Structures are given as C-alpha cells and as structure tokens.
Length: 168
Ligand SMILES: CC(C)(COP(=O)(O)OP(=O)(O)OC[C@H]1O[C@@H](n2cnc3c(N)ncnc32)[C@H](O)[C@@H]1OP(=O)(O)O)[C@@H](O)C(=O)NCCC(=O)NCCS
Image (tube, rainbow, N blue to C red; front, top):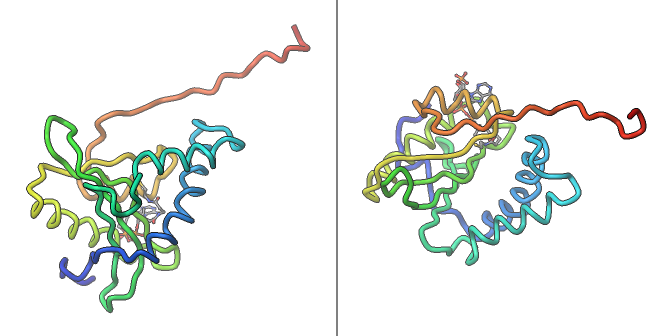
C-alpha cells in the first residue's frame, strides 16, 4: 500500500463529475429502495431532487469538494465527495459519497483515501468527519468501524405482516 497521502486524492475533473452524476443518481435511488425508504417507481425522481438540492451549482457548489482517488501509479480508482457543514456544534467535513471501482476494491484504496481526507480536513481547520451509511452496506460499515468511526444515530425499522383485505 502506498503511504503517501498527497498523491491519493486529486480534484475531480468536469468529465469525471459528469460520469459520477450519471451513475450516482440511480445508485442512490437503488439504495433507498433496498433500505425500504422509497418506492422503486418514485426513486429516480427523488434521487435527482436530492442531488439538485445539495448541488445546485454542480461541482462548483460552494463548500463542496470532489476528489478522484488515485492508485500508486496515479490511475483513477474511485471518487470521494464531502461538504463543509456545521454538525455536532462544530465545522466538519460531511462525506456524501465515496466509491472505489468494483475491480479495484479490497486493495486498500478507501483506507488510503480516508487517511488523505483527514489531512485535507485538518488543512481546512475542520473538527472532524461525519457520514451516513445504509444498514445493508456491510462492507462500508466494516471499513468505517476499522477507521474508528462511531455510530451517532441508528435508525431501526421492522416490516409488519399486513392483514390482506380479502381475509377480514
Ligand atoms: C466501501 C468501499 C468504498 C470500500 O473501498 P475499498 O477500497 O474496497 O476498501 P479497502 O480496500 O480500503 O478496505 C479496507 C478494509 O475495510 C473493510 N472492508 C472494505 N470492504 C469490505 C467488504 N466488502 N466486506 C467486508 N469488509 C470490507 C475490510 O476490513 C478492509 O480490509 P481488508 O481488505 O484487509 O479486509 C467500496 O466497497 C465501494 O466503493 N463500495 C460501493 C460504494 C459504497 O458503498 N460506498 C460507501 C457509501 S457510505
């Protein structure tokens, strides 16, 4: 694993941002459907609305930082997006998305990216890093546990068996 953090994250290019948006909208919609929060029919439109609200000026939206994750040979292997926000009574970095290409996962790129992110966040004078992870995303949860992230809110849901209208 490459220990250098300077070469791990570079500002994202416009073309990379466009490719990310095209994939992120359906990916986020699918996660919301899997987690039981949105219906499949409404999910794409809702995903577009949330992204538009968060990024009204695309990657130029103030306080939002987009990076491409590079491997040791400076080849792109993933992306990371965070926004500077006030949470936990402090100015922090909120990670909205991180992803490593499927064929390059489990090579330590996310670990290196988060180490580089910590450097970036310190440079900005921010107090910490926060993020949300879906309960079904066991891989990401294992990553964050290993990185020392602690749960702050845990949402629980139990699907109840419904009585069919015809059987009453
Ligand atoms: C989550 C994700 C970013 C991890 O990226 P990665 O580069 O593969 O992660 P790393 O190789 O740095 O993994 C570091 C450690 O995290 C844990 N981990 C990562 N992915 C895991 C998985 N799928 N299952 C179990 N543990 C996992 C392991 O402890 C791993 O160390 P190991 O490989 O030595 O066992 C990647 O799987 C991904 O892009 N997933 C799809 C998008 C996503 O879910 N993003 C997170 C949104 S919150």
